[in-house]
Length: 521
Image (cartoon, rainbow, N blue to C red; front, side, top):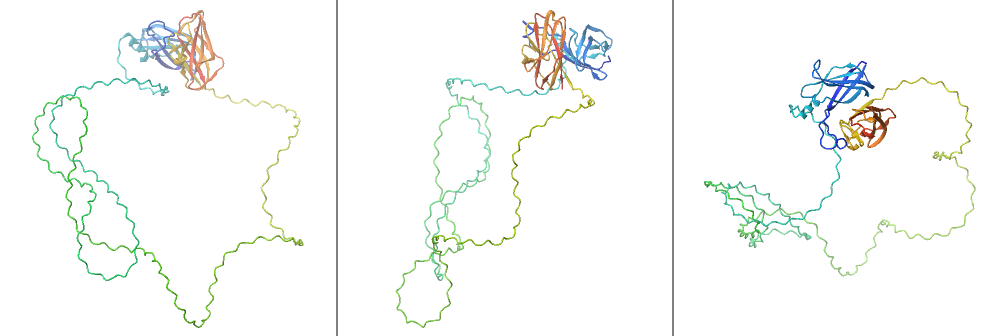
């Protein structure tokens, strides 16, 4: 078999794992296992099936010395070109660059340098290496669901108020600081509303304007009216120049701050100062122009009618004047009651038929009538001769197979069921189940153990999806170290959570587990 494009992916096993199902007692020493993943292609196509693999550890890329024993894995399952396996070279990583050599079905591939992750096992010996550069930050995972808000606990009782301490002595007054600048004058308050104007009386009839008389002497000055409301305070005048500041005396030591005393009551407001003298009255302004003439007053009451004078002599009758205009039509009188109908007169002879009128538009179509009863079915005709089969269509493209791997790293329990995820195992499916990245149908289950269960012992392995067992199951028994399931596939959806249940029977030997399947899209 020609092998090429072997893609290596190495991950050191340092992940945390639930020990409740696999370790009894205190802490166990760190296992030297790490996961090795590779991809095998033949003539540009991924290999499917079982292949013979060997792995060995060297201290040089060519030549050099081999460390430890060679690990052989005959008939190891490869799915869609990809395989995953647990390897262990205890004590092989001490800070020196090491290389792994892989052979596939007897063909040895070039050695690959092992990245720094497995070498981190050297740190377990307590020899600190230089700190490597920080890796890039991983993407932030989705925010978890907010848990329900807990109930508010009962309020505790209020503690008693402690006694007030004695007031400390007042510290010495510090030197007075420089006087600050005068702040700007406040905004002048709004002017009060003008009172409503009284109703104007009716204007009397204009009399005949008389001649303008001489200006009479000025009358005596009337009494001073009541003082108006005090206007808003005028702007503050400019501040005078500040006098020279005297020399500042030495500052005395600051006294210790005493306990602040309670605030005293506000003192009474000071007495309002006396009102200033009224200023002299200003000169009287010029008389304003005469306003517009007011509306004409109402007509006065008509005087009493005088006595009728004696009748004069009748004069000569004058010519008849022209007829006056016709008066308005009077209102229509109330309609009289309808008289009784007279007897019907004899029917007159038919008149000649008039010409035919223009045809009116066609009215809308009426609703369709109900369907008639279905007639009796006719007898079936004889079947025709089958035609020749058509040519087979071209074969459709093969669907995509997405490989999926998991591993326990540590030994699974030998006396109770254990769920295995990706690098961890637990007695609880929810702690290790892995979300699927794509939708499709699961098939091709392959399970491999690091050691056989032993005679008359076995492990039963079952795929679980969202906490429920599926029909994908297989058994590793007696001296075997692998099993597979090739039965019917079953549908899954991206985001479903999958795990592998390991169920021991009798008392099998302790072992770690590597498992895989594919998702056909």
